Length: 559
Image 1 (tube, rainbow, N blue to C red):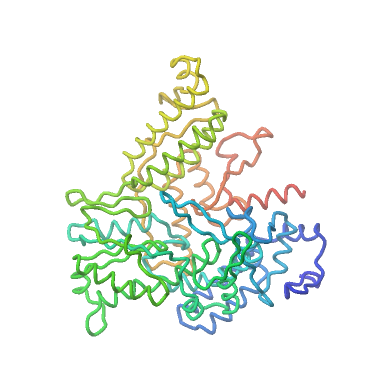
Image 2 (cartoon, rainbow, N blue to C red):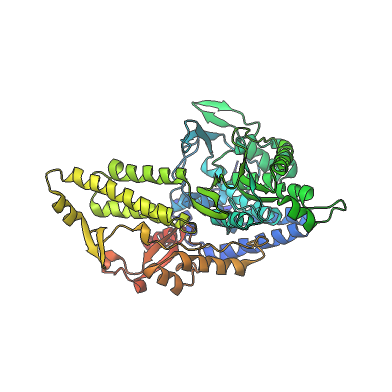
C-alpha cells in the first residue's frame, strides 16, 4: 500500500485516494489469497492455543488484527451478510466499493472508541415479549468481525466437544444425531434435563469476560461498554453481550464452554480423578448443547437434579442463571422439544419428528405468503417464493422422521393455493380453476405449475440420514475432513441437475475455487445469462458464493 493508504490512526488519518481509486483497489483484492493468508494465521493461533502458549497466541492475534487481508475479509463479511442494509446510530451504510475500501483503510485499534448500539426489538416465536437486538454501526461491526477472526481459532480449540451452535462446520443436525446416539438404545438413560438459561446474551458478566477471554482487553471493553440508544436516550451496558453483534456468539460460546468438563469431573471420574467407565455407565450423563439451549441425560431423576444444581453453580460464576419455569426434568417416554424437533420414545423406540411449534410456524408463514403478501402476485412469482420457503424447511427437517409432516404440509399448501386461485377467479368454475392452475408434469397429477416453473412437492423429498460430525474435529486442524464433509453433505441434499452441478465443481465455488458449504449463502450463476440466450441446463450453471458473485458483477460492470 502507498503512503496515501494509511491504515494507522482513525482520528487523523492521512488523505485517502479519490472514490474511483478506492473502488478500483476494492475490486482488485485477491480474495483467494486473502482467505489463504488469514487461514494460515488462524491455524497458527489454533496450534498455539492447543499447546497453551498464550503469549504466542497474543502475538499472532495482533498480527492478524493488523493484517490488510484480515481487514478486507472483515469488511466483506459485514457488507454481504443479511444485516448489510441495516444501519447503526450513525445511519451509515457501506454500500459502494469506495466506502468498503475506505472502511478497510481506516480500521484500527489506535484510539478506538465504539459508538452506542441502536436498540430494536424483534418478535419472539409464539411469545408476546420481544427480543432486544443491539445494532452496531458499520465501523464497529467491521471491528467486531476483525477481532472475531482472531478469537475464533481459540474458541474452536477450547470448545466443548458436544457444542454445536455458531461453530464452523457444525449444525443443528449434528446435535440431533448426538441426542439420538445418547437416547436410542435400550440401555440408554431415561431422564432428560431440559436447560434454559434466562437471558443468556443479556446477562453474561463483563468482569468474567474481561478476565477470561483471550483478546485485546481494551477493544473488548469497548465492545461490551458501548451502551445503546433507545428513543433518543443513551443507556449504559453493565452486563451482557448484545444480540446482533458479530462477535457476540463467540463470546457466549466461550462463556458456556467448560460445562461438559464440569459434568465429567463430577459424574465420570473416580476418587483418583481418572475417567471411569463404571461411573459413566452408572450415571449416564451426556451433555448436548446448541448455543444456549442444552439437554443433559441422566440414569435417574435424582442424578438429573444433582446435575441441575451443578450447572446452576457453573452459571452463577458467569453472571447467569437457569430459568426455573423452563428448566424441567422429563422422562423420555413423555418426550421433549429441542431445535424444532420432538424427541420421544414409543415402546422403547426413539422417534424424532418436527415439533408442533415448527409445523405451526411454517403453516403461518405459508398462509402469509399465499393469502397475504402474494394474493396479487403472478403464479410464477408465487411459486418461486414458495419453493424457497419449502426447500429451506425441507432441508432442515429431511434428516428426521418427517414424511408424515411433509405430506401434511402438502395438503395445507393445496388448501391455501385453492383459496388463492378461487379469490383471483371468483366467477370461474372449479373445473376451469383446476385446469388453468394445476397440470400434469412427468406423470405427476395436480401439480401447481406454469410453463416454466412448478411447485416443489414435499412428499417427494427423500428422508436422508445426517452423518454426525467427529466430536474432536476442528476446522483449523482437520481441513481435509471438513472439505470432504461439505462435498458429501451437498451430494446427499441436492438432487437433479443441481446435484450434477455440485458434483462437476467438486463442491467448490466457480469464481474463487474455495470449498462451499451447502448451508452457506450461495446462488446459481449462469455462465451465459438467460437474457443473452443462456439455457437452464447443467453446462451453463455453476454454484458460487453470494459475495463472490457480487464481486464478479462489480468487476464486470467496471469492464
